[in-house]
Amino acid sequence: MHRFPPRSRQILIALSIALSMSISCVMLHPQADQSLADLGWPINAARDLLNQRDPYRHPTSPTMIPYPLTSAIVVFPWALLPGNLGISLLFGAASGLLAYGLIRNGEYWRLLVFLSPAYFASFRFLQWPPIFMAIYFFPLLAPMLLAKPTLALPVALAIRWTPGRIAGLLTVGLLSLLVMPTWPWRWLSQTGSYGGFIPILSLLGPCFLITALFWRNLQARIFFLLTITPQHRFFYDQLLLWMIPQTRNQMLLLTITAWLGFGYVWQSGLSFWDSAPYILGLIYLPALLIVLWQQPAIQRVYHYLLHHTKRA
Image (cartoon, rainbow, N blue to C red; front, side, top):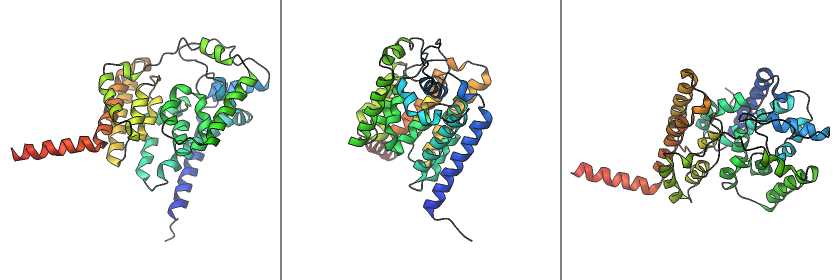
């Protein structure tokens, strides 16, 4: 029986996911390019720039907060494609890159990310987190972090910055200012109705601070940076927490508890605007426990106590 070499198998899986998600976006989000929220805003903003229209002319609301103009710059090639094809291919390509990054070391269990409610919500609302998570594995795409600075910090401090990547970042920023010098002020003036939350400011915040003690550990650093990051209550901005599990069981734990929270909010009729307690208790808290368990110092204390308890 013919078997694909591991690398070929991984590429095939990634391409399959990219293709299936692109097709799914085309079919299930036929009006995505007309939306002024999520990935739709930068696509429309890029088309506005192309047609010499003001991308910040639209009224704002808690569900329609504009993005920095840098987001339009980084998606400009995709905006040239007709209809929802560009946004669909962008999300599909990001999903494929993410899949390849997750499994390129042979850890196929990491594909459980695609079964998480955070990825489901990202697909449902066509959001940036899969793109940002892919950037972690492919830092060449680091300039795209300027599209959503509120979520960029955990990834920006997890990748290695080379002169080329810094130059790319500066180029995107300068291009945006050349196109519209006043955009930073226009954008900031329209972000007042943002309805997100910052986990570190919650009742669980003091517990989350513990992870700062393990700053040198990548997973602890990602967790801590996410807790100080403004994020939405719709479960998608938390996708980066799925970078934390280092075993199949840890990934399953985080995914199952997250679905419990998402499922309860979905089935109970609660508004997702009221979902922060469930995100904190059933995503952030399990992720915190996973981070702590990963620390050798914590494990040494645990085994010490276990040993002395048995002796007693």
